[in-house]
Length: 267
Image 1: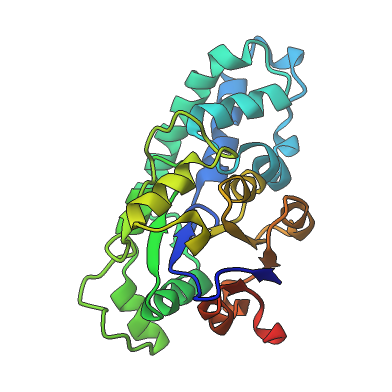
Image 2 (image 1 turned 180 degrees about the vertical axis):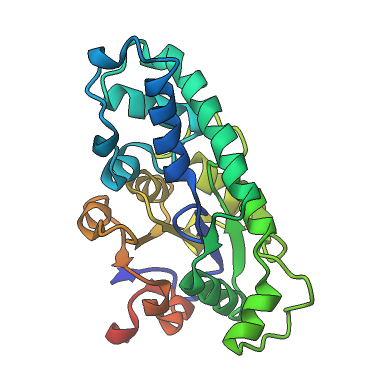
């Protein structure tokens, strides 16, 4: 697979939603638009191509995932031919935010076990870890995920795990939720994460589940690990991900130590 530095990677940069956490973002976007179309925007519904069943996971993944809130809102509205999409995007984004805060409060999200195993193993291998998500809610999710409890349940024993340790605590840098001049697929968010880790882009790899995230990593001259949780292997490969896996359990730690992204079966 992809060749990296001979000395091995020094940093791992993670997107959050869809990579580390199964969040209710998609649900909030879908339900938010449905609510608007049935109420405040009912007078324009017939001017659009929107139907609830047309808001599929594929639409979310291809048009919205990884984008800043209002850019994602505008992209969805344009996809459904909603008039004045740019102007309406703020109302849609605000509706979605109210809904997702309710879902977070109810605990309707969970961490991916393979992601937590991978994060802990990468940390134990001596790599620096950063989170780089466009979502304003990423920190709220990560602050609620207890790594000490997860490690105990999994029978994992790492010296750096202390009581009360959360996913947020383990990060060496975190640029999630910041307002960047350019969102993905521009590499600014990942370049900033690498800089705050004190590393060169070439010393880092990025873990992403969205096409625009993979494109952002490659634009920043970083290697991209595409994580296909939504049956979208071909999309991520088409975005030039250096490797595509369906589970982070399949990534070779030995290859990372050699500066390569590769699967366990290939080592």
